[in-house]
Amino acid sequence: MSADRFSLAGRVVAITGGAGLLGGEHAHAVAEAGATPALLDVDGEAAQRRAEEVGRGAFGLAADVTDEASLRTARDAIVGRTGRIDCLINNAARNPKVEGSGLAASTRLEQMPLTEWQRDLDVGLTGAFLCARVLGGRIAAAGDGGAIVNVASDLALISPDQRLYRVEGLPEDEQPVKPLTYSVVKAGLVGMTRWLATYWADRGVRVNAISPGGVEAGQPDEFQVRLAERIPLGRMARRDEYRAAIVFLLSDASSYMTGHNMVMDGGRTVW
Image (cartoon, rainbow, N blue to C red; front, side, top):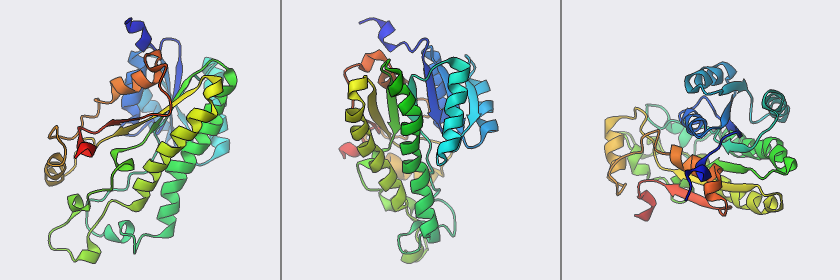
């Protein structure tokens, strides 16, 4: 098989949450495969700084995924600059931190403020819906095929093991937990993937999801040890280990794959 099947040369890839932990990794991946990454983030300056780190023609733009007008402005800016949008990575999300004192009030079901529930869903699910409509709609309307990748999680498939977050000495009703919203958002993205895959199949737009496992990013040592014990490969992911999968899902190498959720979690969901 020719390596050209993995090429993204000449394509423009919009990446939401472009200034985040994995946003820059996605940008590096597609740029190395020949694409032009457009990094979108509510913090436009941070997105541009990340784009400058990536190089290879990458650029950053301010965009709020919860604001349809903001997304239309970003879409028009991308098209005005490059003439096209070929691919979309729905990567923007809130990932509430569980570590630290006093967080149980905002993570436990009984005490989670409704505003936190709504904000998590606004960014993670409504944001993906609006990006699909505004940016994905542009891809579909062009009639040139294209691809969308929704970034889900292994917690779209399994419940969080709340023992990972326990703090010695805290009463049970004060123990921090991974909030319900994270599971709801990530599972919803997998459902959205399947729906969009059939909706735009006649336009040649392929829609898949990727479900990463936990990525090492300076978490406390105790947490990393606990999580590694639950992963057959015995460690968390390095932040660059999803690059090849992203290129595969966006490129012609996966031309007969749509509606699929690619799980890359070191084997955690096998156990």
